[in-house]
Structures are given as structure tokens and as C-alpha cells.
Length: 115
Image (cartoon, rainbow, N blue to C red; front, top):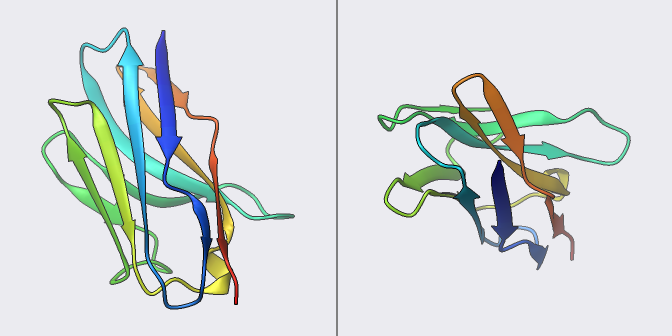
């Protein structure tokens, strides 16, 4: 089994920044992609950003130019630097990774953007 633990969420004013971290542990042997999804109240979970094992990235159009995903393979950790935050970025952010054919999810961390 693989466990994912997120940290870094919280309350921030519009225009502010937050950095999310997600550390994977357990039966780690060959991680493919790592990434972040989010789910706002009343909405479906959506992709925010994903990074492959060679550093290739993909972002949702709504966060391009504001969010940056990165990973530290030695620490099995993925990060999401979020700048210029907007109220519409408010959601629970979930970390995810794929290892072979299995996808794992974290418990989620709340990000609230409000003045």
C-alpha cells in the first residue's frame, strides 16, 4: 500500500501564495505520475497539475502561469506552488500518484482564498 500525506493548505487573501506538499510512503517502487486535483463545493473533482517521472508537466488552463508543480524523486514528494491566488481557487486539494496500474489519493487539504 501507498500512503500520501498532504500539507500546506490554509486561508490566504486574494493575490497571495501557498505551497502544498505531498509525501508518499509505503510500498514505493516505481512511481509514474504525481499530481494534484481539487474539488470545490458542488463541483466535480478536477485536474490541477500533473508531473511525470521525467519532469514533464500538464496544467489546467485555469492555473497556467500561476501554479507550478515540481517533485523530488529522492523524497517521493510532490509540491504545488500557488501564486496569484483567486477566490475561485478555493477547494479541497488532493494529491495523487500512479504506480503501475494503481492510483492512490491523499486525504485532501483545504485551500481557502478570501479577504
